[in-house]
Length: 193
Image (cartoon, rainbow, N blue to C red):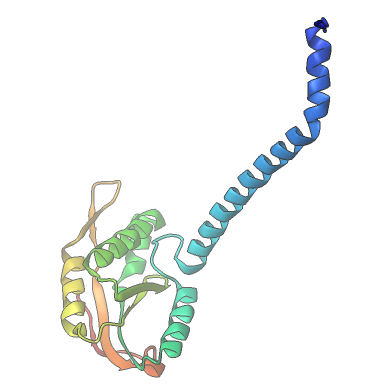
């Protein structure tokens, strides 16, 4: 004996859909939650990056410096090498060529510096055209590093959209001080003219 029922396709699909509605809604909600979570994680990574880096140059910022100081204190490190420098006559660059070119000079300056630095070096945009380089490697002599940076920056041309060449000139101070005196001032001020 066999029973054969003929059920139209549309009512069959409707019945299956209604019986599966809870599972389908659950799957849809899980997909939405997963996408939202991934998006939130991506945005949090971006916010974390922006909280520690200068938006223009990509160098670390003062917030990173505060966290760096805290980590160094917790680690018991008493000595940090510090090199503070700025671009001489930077206002003249902005006045003569415009702030867009000035921004490009700062971006290129950071790129040049970062290409010469090791993992133990932390380049921080202190403000405007001022930069602070913190060095945690005690074996890395600061004076030769500062001179190497000065020479590289002095040679490093930065082209503007008018075809002119600008050079960012490093004025620097080298200091190796105890952690508490890292920002107290720099000795041996040098300016390229």
